Length: 133
Image (cartoon, rainbow, N blue to C red; front, side, top):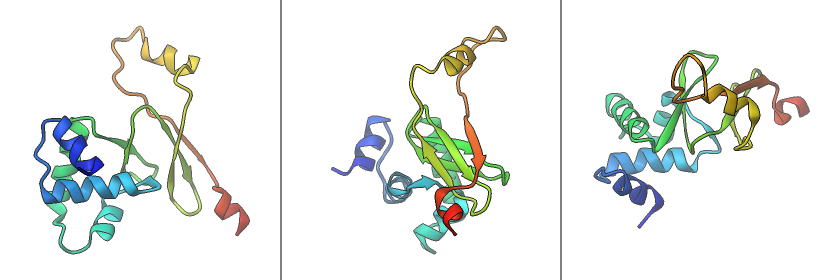
């Protein structure tokens, strides 16, 4: 059984062809992807509306995460509790591993305003590839 099928079944979702294709694309990506990038990856067989519905379902079941990008497009990636580095030159969103016990994140999740469910961390700058060019 593939990782994507296992994740879908663990979440109580049917591992149909389209869901598996979308989740495979997100899991295999080296960066957080926009829906447009996913459509390019998946090809003409994937309907735009179907893609958006699947992405929403996967986010709802906490299989993938949705992050806002500086380009006003959502970016999707696998994994929980990590941040992103956005290259202002090439536009790629790279996933960052963050220490689980970071004091700043801990203090944010115990907000006096109420319960915090998610925290987004995005650093903007120029990636190594663009600096070399």
